[in-house]
Each structure stands twice: as structure tokens, then as C-alpha cells.
Image (tube, rainbow, N blue to C red; front, top):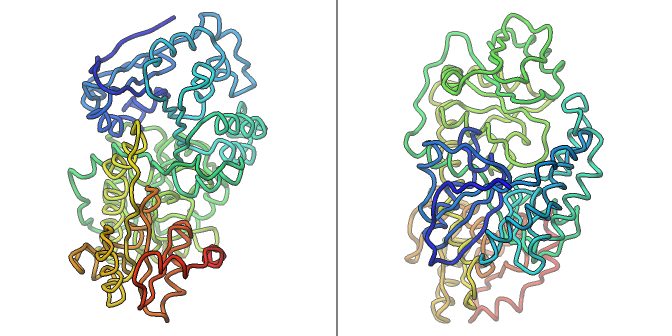
Length: 515
């Protein structure tokens, strides 16, 4: 058995064990989604990161790790590799999950941990097989079943993964059933998982996105205004297969006035491209960044229906406006026309031509809006308090606190009711952007998206809708698309207490307004 201590950790703190894939903590992979999040949690906890194989840590990783984090690798029996079924993608993980040496090593490392966090689907069963009675948390970073459906559609992409969607479904369902709690990557993923696997609502405990490290790095600089190139240049990153490559080639041929730069292995399968298409293939990180900086726009077209497309951050961090379909920006809460230019199969060429005539200020506004969105949305600090609360050994019974939708007269009356009952008012939401960041009744006014997200990340935060009767229906419909109907309370002028408001709420009627 192979075991290697990389860094030491404090021994007197409460202990958490995290089982993760090597890419989650190796910055050379460009992901490292564990590092910032768990380094912040390590202020209060002693954290062991368990990796199923040895990881080569260098200085790039060391600066992300905290003194209270220990990293260790565990390994199967030496002959396990001979038992891997080369025609079954999941075989290697099943061997790890059932391997007695791995279970013994995990037990020795994690027996004093309060609970186990599994950073991927692949090791949930290893944790459950080792600890039948310990609390297991599954932090999902992808929907495996939907991913394998995609592999089935594009069967020439990866032979070992084709025709395995049924196996992926069974494997993922077993992991979801074995976990006590699940944190999804996006709210859409949470809904999809609940639908696919008939999960009880209480098992889906919240949303934790990825990209924390890159979002933190972005804060060091903001995108600069770009001068328009004499010939409009577009860039497309594709590490894997390009969906519908023939159609892509035809689009680029029709857009002869645009110069396209294709980076990554996916470009190698584009055939018979016109002279305005430049295939770079695999390049260094420095060369990739140079090309993206020089281009006027970036394409984020993707057929995938799962996870988050982190290429969005590569583009945005370098100040390059993004042209994308809705799937390409999935998980980013991006708004078409503000954070990106919408392009789908029906208007692909038209959208690019429309972008070409935008002036520098219009292009810069889109890039800057997307930059601000990602810096704010994916700052790991936003998720620390709620996760820390979840991790608490014996969380206190917390009273409900409320946001008020409507920074107007009705909102003021609602805040007076809260003050009269000694209930915390968290702030206001409003659809008027000019009010964002200002104070109303001594509380901050936020955008609805910020308020909805905060409510979704807590069991005790709710929303009072306090607007004129003519606006009430529209605002209720807006809110219920993003938060549970049970968290919505309607204010009426003569309500004297929260209980008065609750009695007048028809939860089922509100729930039916969700489209």
C-alpha cells in the first residue's frame, strides 16, 4: 500500500476527511476546485485530503494549501490494475471502492473525522463501504448520467464511454442513495438529480459551484478595453470533440469576413476548413492566453447539458466578450445581452455579424459585466458560512430571518412589522438596478438574483414580497422560479405579524406559478 504525507495539520481541531480526485487539488490540471474552499474551512477544521493515487505537488499547489490540511494518497493492492475491465469506464472505481486495502487505509486516516466529504461520484461507495454509520456528504461536480447520454450521442468521441449510460445511471444512483447529504454544482443540477433518482428534498443540502481559485485570481486585475482588430477575430477553445463539426466548418466558411482561431485537440477533427480558419491545436497556457487576448470575441458553443463550462472563465478573465448558446453559460447565471451575446443554431452567423458592428465601448461593457458576475458569483467566501453552519456538530435552532422584495412604501411597512417582532431584516430586493447597493430603511438593497441565491443556501432565510397589489402576481411568479414556495410570504397592508402574513399564503397556488 502506498501512502505519502505531503503536509501536516493541527491535531487539536475538529476533523473532516475529503476524498477527491487528483485533478481537484492539482493546479496543473487547471481545476483545483478543492483548494481555496477547503483552505478557508481549515481555519476552523483539521482537514485530510485523501487522494486515490500519489499526486506530484509542487510550489504552485503549496501556496493554496493551509497548515491545517494534510494530503495523503492511498492505493489498492498491487495486482488490482490487472483486474480492470478495459471496456468498462467504471471498473477502476469499483475496484477501489471494494478494495480491502483502500478501505483499511481510509479507515485509519478518517476514523476520527466527524464526517466524510466525497468530491466526486466515484468514491462515495468507498466511503460508505468503509464507514457504514458515518455521515457521508457527496459534493457533485457533474451529472454523470447526462454526461454519458452525451457520449452516446457522439459515439466516435470516446469508445470506452459509449453505450454506458445505463451503467452510469446505476452507479450514480447508488452513490446518491449511499450519501446522507448532497451538494450539487448548480441549482439546475440539483433539480435534475432529484428528478432522476427520486431523492428526498432534504438530502439535497445546497449548491457549491467550482471555479473558486480562478475567481480569486481574477480579482487581481480587471479586463482592459480592447481596440478593434482590422479583421474581426474569434477564438474557440475545444479540449475534446466539437459537436456537429461539419456545421461549424460551414458556418465559419460563410463568415469569411471573420478570422477564427481554434485552440485545443478538438480542432484537429475539423476538416476542409476555409482559409479564414486557423487551427492551433494544443498550445501552452501562455500562448493560449495570448491568442484569447488578441481576439475580439470568444465562442462558447457546447452541446453538453451538465456541469459548468469553465472555458467561460478563461475568456472573461482576459477581457474577451463571449458569444454563446445557453448551454455554454450554464451554471453562471449569465443574462443574454448583458454578460454574453446569445447565439444558437438558428442565429449563429447573424449573432457574430451583429457583434462585428458593435463599437469598443459596447464590447467592453459586455466583457466587464461578465467579469464582475464571475468575481462576485464564484467567490468561495460566499459559501463558507453556510457550509460551516452545515458542518456544525450541534447547530443551534435558528429563527427565521427575512429579505423584503420591494424597496418602497409597502417594503417599509413590512420592515416595521419585522422590527416590531424583533425579527431580523436581512435587506431588500428590487427590480430597479439604480437602487442596488443603496440603503433603504437602514438596510442594503440587493438584486433579486443575489437574494434568491442567499435564500437557497440557507434553511432559515425567507422572502417577504411587499409590493403593490398590481405588481404582486408578477413578483411572486418571478420569485418562485428561483426559491421554494414555502419560503415566500406575502405582505398585506394591515398585517400585524409574520403569522398574519403566513395565514394568507396559498402555497400550492404559488407553487403552480413555477414554469
